[in-house]
Amino acid sequence: MGDQVNTEVAKRAMLITELVRREPEAITRSIAMMAYNPSIGRVLEHGGVNLFGNLMVEIIPRFYGLVSRAHFDTVHTETCERILASFKTNKGKRLSYGQAQKPLNVFLKVYVDWAKLPTHELADVLAPLLHVPLDSLLMGFIKRTYSDEYERRICSIRNLLRDRIAERLQMPGARGAARQLLGAELALTAVNKEIYLAWQDLLRSIYPGKPVLLDVIWALERARVRRGAPAEERGVHGV
Image 1 (cartoon, helix red, strand yellow):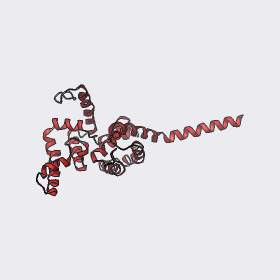
Image 2 (cartoon, helix red, strand yellow):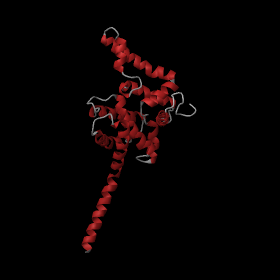
Image 3 (spheres, rainbow, N blue to C red):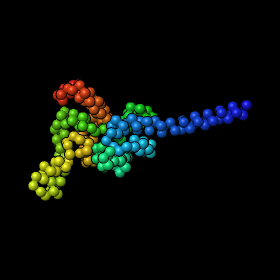
Image 4 (cartoon, one colour):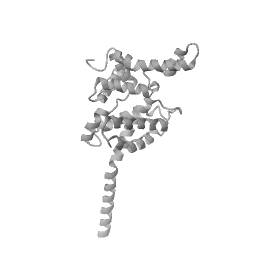
């Protein structure tokens, strides 16, 4: 009888030890699922959430291995490239950089800024380095509110890209065709790496201390849209 009790106690102890060891992985996978499904899940191919969870478990320690903006941005770029190489849309097409950044940036916002992981102290150091998740609501608000900066930083790049495409097309109406190939101005599908980085620079210039705070605009704008309020009735009070 005593041996049986000891065996049960030992089994429970082993189980608890294993659960404690793997709890950080479980938290990472859960946050990855919560970030992936609402942000981009419906656009990407079936089964992507598990792949994204695996990637986050692998990559997240690298973000806090060396805490500096240069290191963070390097790992962020490498992770976006991994997403571009590993994921496809639900129509079997390659993702744009704008689509690749969305689940990653939402995950990092929740993991670091909201959940204060991996530790409260490290999260406070990492939070100012986070990128702002791009989407059409946020970009539309910034375009309306900071129109001069938008024209200078974002439109100028789009115009250069349009002209490069038009030059290669060498056909009547090339500029119009190039504009169509670039895609809708505020669509994630039209955001390449160059435009993405320009957006992050613009957003960081608005609030350098913690750019990811600007993601609050998305929530407030979404509420405005759901109320059916016009764009003039902005979701952010006092702006």
